[in-house]
Image (cartoon, rainbow, N blue to C red; front, side):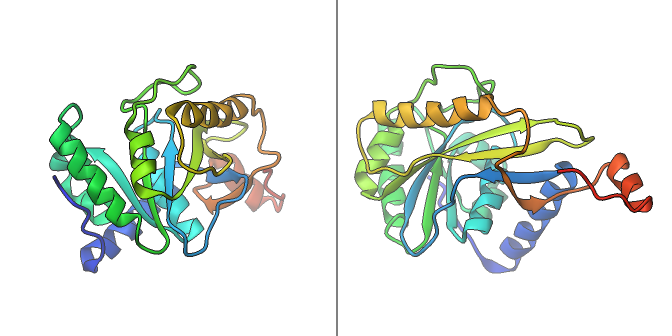
Length: 227
């Protein structure tokens, strides 16, 4: 297994680069709900609809003050090993020995203050809003091993009245470890709420990205930008 290797000069440079890359690609990161902070560790489970999802979690973790880690397919992490510097660690799906090793390692991470271990329980990319979600049991097992608070997050990428896309994050209701059905219900509820969103009302922008042509033109004319 490939373990996370956060820190060091390269890790700090990579953090800065990812932040710049995110801001250059999106208009902003918007959150609805309260991102829990404090010293407690937590398991964060998220729908998986886009290549950007891991980098979005990186930004969310920085905003929330988490020490963020993320489970990743070993063949992909082997290919992009530098992601271990951002907290990625590997699993080989379908191999019980690998899954057990990853569970033990994730449990160790969850014993650290402020740790947030993130997992995509669908195990694959699926279009946003397609329900029911197909969750694998890894999230249930990891929650039982870690014995920490479980937090559902839903992510959606969308265009409103601007040139650049916005990233929306819906914060679900934290809950203790439980049966897989509980995880499915909580995550589907968060996804449904995001599916119904037609404006940014009720969201807070936590990361500002690049401005489009229209917003630059408004700035030249002295007009206040729209949300």
